[in-house]
Length: 326
Image (tube, rainbow, N blue to C red; front, side):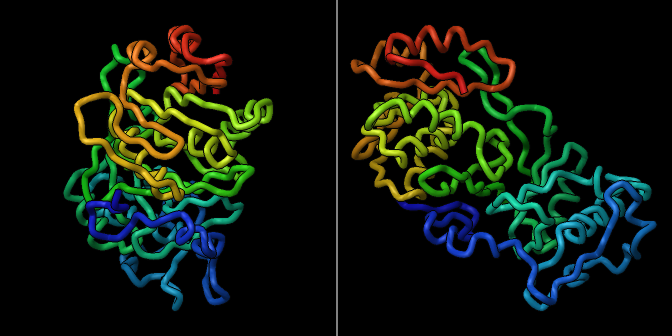
C-alpha cells in the first residue's frame, strides 16, 4: 500500500520519520517571542489587528505562537462578519495541531501544521484563511460537541464539513512500547486529544498483561489505535473491525504508517485488508460474529459516549473469552 494523502502537501509520513525530534516540532527557538495575549479579552483591545498578516510575529525559524496564528484567523473572521469586534481568542475556533504531541506549553507553529474547527464560518472565509494564514492547512465546519462517525447500524452517520484545504492530521499516542502515529481525516473521524498518557491505552495494557501473546478483536476500532497498540505489545493476532468505512480506511493507513505491511483486498466483502498477523473488516459486529470461525482471548469494545454496550458485549461473547469495555 502506498502511504499518501490526496491533498498534495505530503502530510502523511511513516512514524519513524515523524517521531524524529517530535518534541522540538512545536517548541520555540531562542528567538521566538510570546505575544502574551489574553484569551478572554477582545483581540481588538490588545493589538492592532490591521497589522496581522502572514509575517506578523513570525520568527526567523519560520514559526509563530499559536495565539498569533489564531489572532490572524480571528482577524479574517471579524472582517468577513463571521465574528464581531468584541470576539476573543477563546471563541475564535478549535485549533487541531498536526502532529499533535502532548505539551505543557503553548505551541509555536510552522506552515500547514493546524486544522481549525468551528461551527460559525462561511466557505468564503474558510478559503481566505487557508490562503492567507500559512500555518492553517484546513478548515472544518462543525460543532465540537457532536461526535463524528456512526454509533451503530441503526444510526445515521455524523460528519463535519471540510470547507477548505486538507483535514488530514496526526496524533502522537503514547504506549508502553513506544509512541504511535495515528492519522485521521478529521472531518470524518471522531476527535481525541493527545495526552501524555492515553487512558484507553492504559486500560488495554492492564488487560494485555494477563496474557502471553494474546489474540485480540478490536470490534469498534476507529482509526485503529488500540489494535495497533496490541500488535506493538506482541499480540499474536489482531482483528480490526468498524462499521464506519472512513475509520477502516484510516486503520489501514495507520497500520502502514506504524510499520506493518498491509495487503489491501479489492473485493465487495467485509474483509478489507490483511497482514502477517492481522485482518481488517468493515462490518456490523452482529453480522461479523457469524462469519468469523475463531476464538479470541480478548475483545475490545470502545464505543461513543452514551452508547448502550450490552448488544456489543453479547455479540462479542460468541467470539472472545473476555470482553473489555474501554
